[in-house]
Length: 106
Image 1 (cartoon, rainbow, N blue to C red):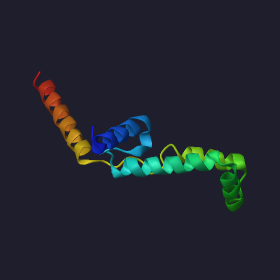
Image 2: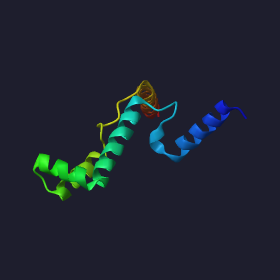
Image 3: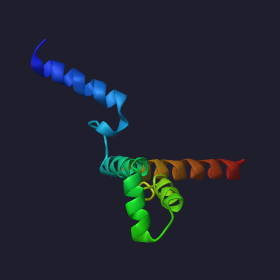
Image 4: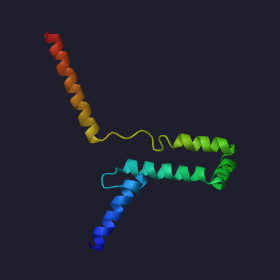
């Protein structure tokens, strides 16, 4: 096996093992979400960072950890709609209109 194949296999193994390493189909939103969650998790895991943030924000350590955990739920806000989502919504509306027309005819 060549070194290129070996590197590709190692990369695929890392991508399967760790979610945040990314892959070819990863969107910008998912990439940024992974980065922010990793950052918040690192802050929570390092007591000195939590202490620093708590002093800056004038909050207790527990409150800072709680706030960081809440930020991890949707770190970048709701997922933006893609063209596929819009197309799916249009298909759903068309199906609903067809069902309504069938009900009216019955």
